[in-house]
Image (cartoon, rainbow, N blue to C red):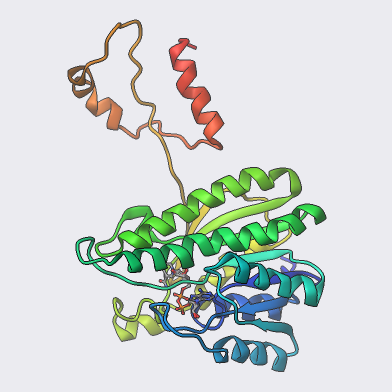
Length: 303
Ligand code: NAD
């Protein structure tokens, strides 16, 4: 197979000073992309800032013969998110690829979680993804080309103790990308979501040290590379990756039950049919909310 390349393409990668983002930056730059390496450089809980991580990744890319520029702005406020995208537009004249990857953790049980822990995690993950996407979208639309990859988590898709803030933000990102995929469809802008697993500073508290070193961020990067590539036709999809495992994840809806002709639908009627309502045999995906609504309404008319 011909090697997938990114020559002439400009990529913005948030949170690329370490962990997964760094692996994406090195991969895309090694295959010809000009990369905006964004990273605020704070600690894993979102406090502080440091220009060193982003600069070091830029230096590494340049010393390998690639092209990159550092950006130290935070994704969490709209003005600074706009500056991240402006760095690409001012330096390289466009933005073709946006990888929303920046992230922090503030894990606590719901009872112990301070509102600040909730707001901060929502700001960096969900607001940050929205802000960067909103800032990049107009120029992608104008050039009729864009590849957006955003980062969800199994904590959002499946739930995890102590991560109500993070899980909500991460599932929100999947919903956001579903809608961006719809809006980008006409302009060759593809928007997808990944669900990664990797040994990084965000997982060092939950993964044993020997596992961390084996679950390399570099094992997630090929999926992101493919989703960013010109030939990728996928949009509005979710993919899991980690430790060499790759799979598509999806929201599905069962065939369900339709009551017809009754004047009243009671709780007891539902309970009687609960096995059928819960069944995911014959479950299907919907490509849009409109398609799902069409299916629901067609039941009413008995189609
Ligand atoms: P990481 O801490 O190594 O990387 C996150 C980077 O984001 C850091 O370099 C950090 O400085 C940067 N960052 C934080 N706040 C920022 C802000 N406001 N603006 C700009 N940059 C900011 O951790 P990672 O594991 O590589 O995480 C990358 C992404 O993957 C995150 O969104 C994370 O939630 C997600 N994720 C990771 C895993 C995993 O197993 N590692 C699992 C699920 C999801």
